[in-house]
Image 1 (tube, helix red, strand yellow):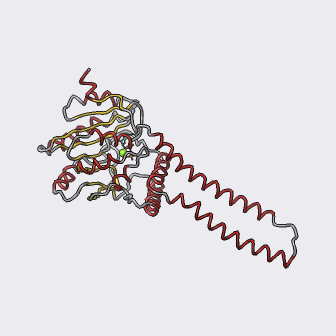
Image 2 (tube, rainbow, N blue to C red):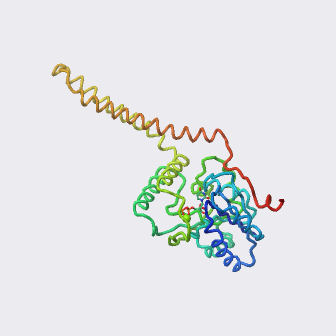
Image 3 (tube, rainbow, N blue to C red):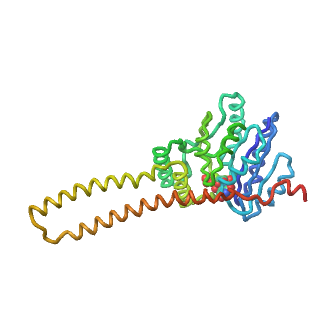
Length: 312
Ligand code: UDP
Ligand code: MG
């Protein structure tokens, strides 16, 4: 039995050896399983690559180094492509995903009832309250407007069967939102819950703004409901306009036509103009995603792997 673990790393020089030490403890407890740790160097600007080159002397370590920073989603995709295990797992390098849980995850998959064991955190301790608030709002909205379920608090930490991984690899879209893709491919997932653990060292790579943009990306990737907004507004405004027209005709017939009411006219123009721009903007979002998709650029570019190092 072979288990591949994919670990995206971006400027994580402090964490890699700490992580490997913790993983080693778990791997020693699972003697029957052959492990393959695939580290993805996502264009780090610190010593991450040097540390990985060094670490890959261990035969359970492999690495893939990108030509620049392509983002965690690209890292996950590359890892899934390179993984050769019967089970494939995803983990962050910052030890926010407790390695000991892998034992339980592995045992559950071995019972052959589930195709995937995933984790979700039940608490958001150590996170600013505003961020938690927006996160909760986001999950509410996306689950209303998307047919694919996006589980609140789901982490990327999970272990999947080869069959499920192959299905995920068939989803070749450029704008990748893994949480959605994992759910979209279906299969039976068992959810394990755990408390939020804070990062062991280094800093989070996600700012509030980055998370916000990421959430917008996920909406365009998994829902087309915003596109209907223009149509809904259109119908609504037509109805309102119809009522107003009748009102004005009747009023003019009864009271004549003194010139007044330009402020209300200006307000209406602004309102309708605003709504039109909003709708054009939404269409623009989808158009830009389509544009990127049509260009068909590779999701990531590999500059070096552990094999190149051995050939040198
Ligand atoms: N990461 C990556 N590429 C990026 C940003 C992050 O590979 O552009 C990796 C990072 O090294 C870590 C994981 O993704 O292993 C999660 O990142 P982080 O801990 O910063 O996110 P958070 O836990 O705060 O959501
Ligand atoms: Mg983290």
